Image (cartoon, rainbow, N blue to C red; front, side):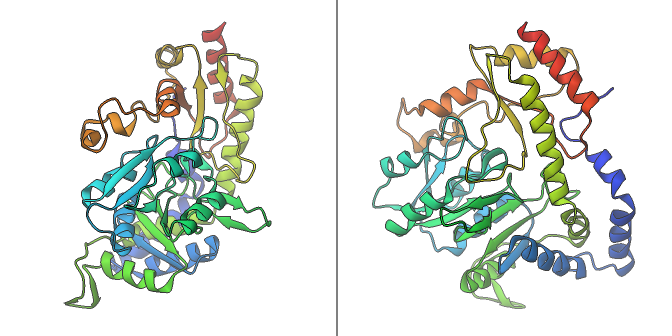
Length: 374
């Protein structure tokens, strides 16, 4: 039995008829760029998220870059982001001549540490990029309060938490990606809502920002061949939109399946003292883009090696803090360290979790994990 981190083939087979029909329609129409499916998916996604504007683009990294371009951030402006995240979050900050200011994350939920926002705030700070890591929301109510107090923009990196709900203290519920000034997401194939290539989107409730984002993503033009600002060429192609249109209908079902897998892991791994199963934030639902354990006492790497020998895949998201990556050394002083981030990089390991719940496969994984620790 071949165990996979993500079973895209099994997922496809269940929706094959609709997917194939959507792709064939694009081919029949030969509307490969900005075809009808792009607008249709955009409107469906706006309705699902409860947001005024969705602007599709080529990938999640482009989404982050376009968001920062739309906010008129200037070279030298400081942007706070977590150090424990995928490189794209900070990469686009540096590419635009801005300064990434990396802060620590919470021990249990892996989201940006509120105390560090205050600690690393300077007169040059202009924005915060909270990352909804592994599938649940950062504490957006507190982040928004901090941002409003200091007149900062909030750009949500929602590449891993599409479909997650955040509940405010007054009972208001919003989808992640629709809470800050701009939300950004990726439709990379392995994402909870993934296409069959690259894709991404930006979300906002601000009409003016939406207008500017659309213009930037289309070569800075409001009218064809008339370019008001320097932009880029970033669009979601029609075939990918057709795939996403189908899969969006199943997104909540996919999230439920991932939660069933996570619950099963939790129940069966709870007795292993050297393992900490994922914490669920009280104010957020979890869509389990990743099911990530913390393995104590220096046994993480040994566990991964053992699982590989048993043909069980696993991944380490992420093995090195961003500030220790060679590309980012220029932004930090020698000896810079964030204690929680450094611990997590040595302890986290993600197990297979996807939409095709299979108890037999989970039992194999769980049995081998127990065997390693016994």
